Image (spheres, rainbow, N blue to C red):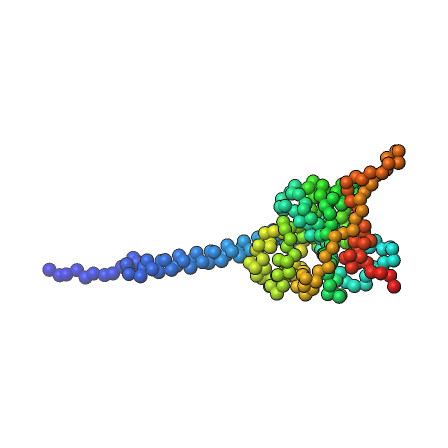
Length: 260
């Protein structure tokens, strides 16, 4: 009897001792690629959600022509300055309580900087009605505070940073970083802030702070005076609010200098 010739089918995969190994390697590679893609997307989301805040950008654009509160033998400084308003709150969510407000003034001409704290109880005027910085922040959020505070302080802010803690040191530590790696290198900082600045502007601020040196910041508290009212009998009493001394605040920030 003639023996039937056997043929191997090429359309059926053959079992090999390496089949499972190859499959595992392929799966591992796919997972690594997926992790890289997810990481890149997450980093981009972090940047876009924390930086370039349109609400804060609009608030900065809505500042009036505050001008400097010249007077008392002072004139506007001829140096170039960048002013940044830092609002520190318990969280970045709406309705959070404001803990502190500070204004950072970077003198880019002289390479110096001043950091002045402003009390949350400082009195502001909104729609011809009195309020405090803390109450306005709690009721309407950070963006609503920019223009009224600028008007009371006689300062035009260039940038705003809303944060859940003191992030100035962390911001300075970004000096030397690259925009492409910002989300990865500053993930902790980005989780704490919201700002109008884009990545390049944030890095420029970091370079300026690093150049000055945090130890060289001229730190002070904004000069204030108690707000008082006089009743019909002529008795004077304090309201519990404080008023900014705009002239001395600008002097502390280096925006006003003694007249020659």
